[in-house]
Amino acid sequence: MRHLYTFQLIDAVARAGSMRRAAEDMNITASALTRRINRFEAEFGAEVFERLPGGVRLNPAGELLLHHYRAMQSDLSRVQGQVADLSGVRRGHVSIACSQATLPYFLPEQIALYRAAHPGVTFTVNVRDRAQAEQELATYSSDLALVFEPVYLVDFEVIHIAPQPVHVIMQPSHPLARKTELRLRDCLDVPHVVPSAKYGVRHLLDYAARRGVRRVSPVIETESFELIRHYVLHENLIGFQIPIGLEDRADGALVYRPISERDVQPGGLILGQMRGRTLPVASARFAMQLASALKAYG
Image 1 (cartoon, rainbow, N blue to C red):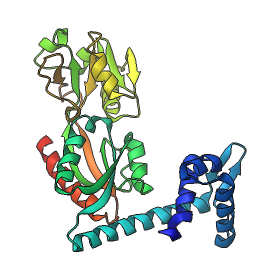
Image 2 (image 1 turned 30 degrees about the vertical axis):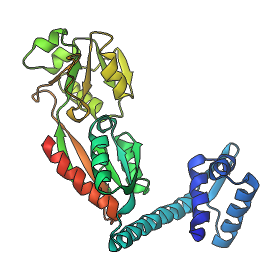
Image 3 (image 1 turned 135 degrees about the vertical axis):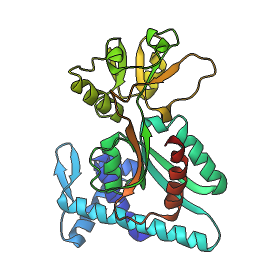
């Protein structure tokens, strides 16, 4: 739709932070892009970018404009989905911001299941931490968020909550693997690898440790849950994860044990959308499927 092209260019510049990089992304010349932005600003009656020595960034007027464009995009996608339903053709696009723990097993299975019934639907999966996921909803960058322990919940409309106790992952030969119940103090007394502070699992561990006048002192801190899962195979220490990101290993290379809820309360894996927003048809239906699947987790 040609009348939206200028808005697409503005969005591209905002994401890239540079006219030159945005021009490359959009496959036009930098001079043509600059002229188009300048012409739009003249017609609009206000500049939308702050020109900086190293690039550009949206000013307050630009942020308002871009929010309007993304909201308009969302409404258009919803109408397109409804029109597709009228013709009996299931099309559309679903964008979801999600925690890393949902990536190895849960989301691939759910997306494949949905596309088996609606092969015309496409997906964008954005891996985000718990604060970033909420920002994705507020800026219309994602339709849905599936995130562990969101931070703010101000504009977050909860669709479903699945409780997730924090689990210890380790080799079967680790001394803690023989215990029938794991206490947090036992875990903190042995070498451990943990997620960085911006992730929900670490938030729960830090909070519980402070209550017991302890601290989490990892030998490795990482943003990658994949690294945690694989590193414990190389060194006989422990890591932490939530059940939705774990798989029963037939080879017995790893075992999983929950930490006692007397020490660490389960966190919430929350499926949500932006408060008050009417989702596109494909996203609304996928949200219903996810909510149903999450019921298996409590």
